[in-house]
Amino acid sequence: MDTGRPAGRSQALVLLLASCLPVLGSVLLAPVLPAIQEAFASTPGASVLAPIVLTAPALLIGLTAPFAGRVVERTGRKRLLVFGLVAYGIFGTAPLWLPTLELVVASRVLVGVAEAAIMTCCTTLLADYFHGRQRQRYFGLQTVCTTVAATLFFALGGLLGNQGWRTPFWLYAASLPLALMAVRYLWEPAGRQERAGRVALAWRLLAAPIGVTLVGGLVFYTLIVELPYVLGGVGVESSATIGMISALASLATAAGAFLFTPLAHRGPGVTVTLAFLLSGIGLAVLALAPSTPLVIVGAAVTGLGNGLLLPALVTWALGRLTFAQRPRASGMWTAALFVGQFVCPLVVLALSAAISGLSSALLAIGALSFLLSVLTRAVRSTDAKPVLADG
Image 1: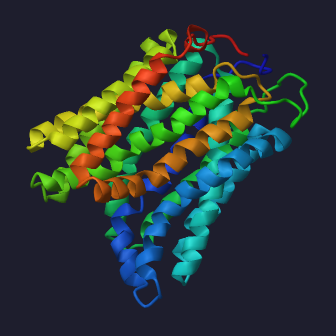
Image 2: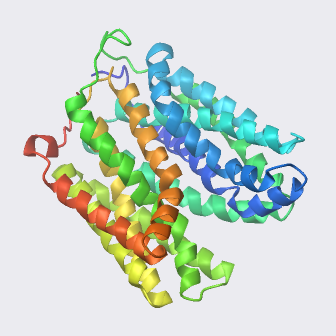
């Protein structure tokens, strides 16, 4: 497939930076949630609505990303990405002046819709612009960038939150210069002349990676959500210490993403298998760790597996699809990942109640990760080999 002209670092930079924006929505506001709830204490149901300010975008990405894939087919990749970036800036900064908690939550719902468009377009364009080893490298860097961004945004959210709960929302305006960069540096790929909506998805190739990604999203976010509680269980109460250990886990995740590039040629039968194996081992160590040093070891091993997991899954899902199939497939892959993120704390909570505590729940999810490792290893050799040329 001919994209019309060769893509380079400028195009990759825009797409990688834009891929970080949904992470901003996930972690930026965590430090100010208590302040938001306090500010709207007189609002009925504030204790329920305030956490939704944080989680609503992830849920909306999961619900709307498949539809974003269909919209991409009709409007084009670049156009929808620019629209999503502008909408993200407008709705993301809206809480700076919105007077009620209900309106703030509504704005967060619209941010989630914009994020679905951004993630679907970014992943699709990375697959369109780059091929073979270069594509694999940028999918790995996508995980590196989002992981580093998560660490940075968490810190920024805490610092800006000291100036008031509304202040962190200013960072959502970062999407507006990115929209201008997208207009300047991106172009609509020249795909085969296939009419939108008339090309069937290759479900034989797509069903397994989408299903595995749904559970993979749960495994991936377990570390992010539960690490502070595990540290609390071994006596770590300092928020600074928790933040430092979380940052170490993020660095391990970045290292895992870098590990993907030299392993990518082995295919998902190796990369996805190894990712789930490492995550399962790490979660088991976290579940059984009696002290802080072992918690750090478990977090590092889990992070290493998580970093390898996302680029391995997206390469498995999109690597052998045609130009016309990628938008819908990218939207479905994104939806599966973020649905896994959204249900993660609910699943952990349910498991903790059903099988006697957080440690047992982490062991159960670790065992699930081991099972996925075994199942993925059984992928047929024809599916395990990556396609380095465009499909």
